Image (cartoon, rainbow, N blue to C red; front, side, top):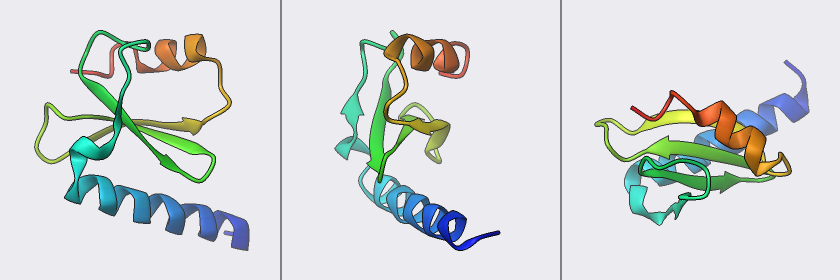
Length: 80
């Protein structure tokens, strides 16, 4: 694992810790799915997660510049 991968993982881990502590801080994403999916940022990456589960369920981590249509397709079927 190279240094940039380590920074990425550390950054995502920090964002996940924050989302676990305060899950409602993320943004609602009704434009992506009809399910109650929220998202939080970790650098240039978006963490999509569901509030309907305990513990918090991470649905996907993707680059923030992806097309919303591609993101919606990635999330389809993962919301439950």
